[in-house]
Length: 211
Image 1 (cartoon, rainbow, N blue to C red):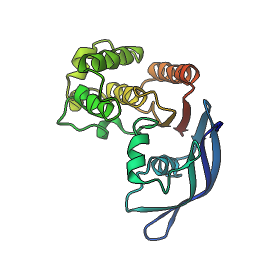
Image 2 (cartoon, rainbow, N blue to C red):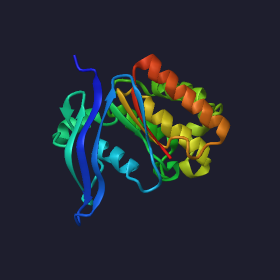
Image 3 (cartoon, rainbow, N blue to C red):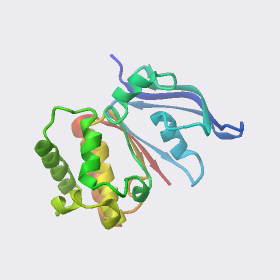
Image 4 (tube, one colour):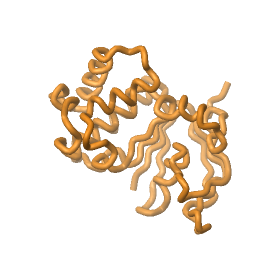
């Protein structure tokens, strides 16, 4: 039985030019554990998250090993990646204002993402699920929010919608890249408490990025 959710061994990420971005990163995240990476801006925290998510693009080169429940992510075929990302591994991105397509309503974007891995769920069931989750994050007018375009919502609202989108699939691993950046102190405390509760209830492993 594998108890290690995420294991990174000797991870080195460089730019395509060969300049180093992060060097010699190694750590383990146990199943159901919360682990924080703390560092200054530009230290490479977000780059580590992107490496785990396979979002390096052509700008970066990664060497070493990233194991998710014993499976090597760096060499995983694209077909297998599509079965993992967005379902078993989800990411809360740092900037909610650029994370959504401005021309598509919020609910529709959540629906398209959820349907990739839960195609048999009815639209009514999905929207009930989205509404209940948004209410747990302190958003009351969920019908209006789900029918709104992203640019009509505040940064704090979008941040909470993005967190809800990441955890609605009940992933085994959640990468939280500064998830409370756009929120006031009271809401930050609520979000952190809820993430901790979900971690305990679902056994979700959480990699938390912060300054």
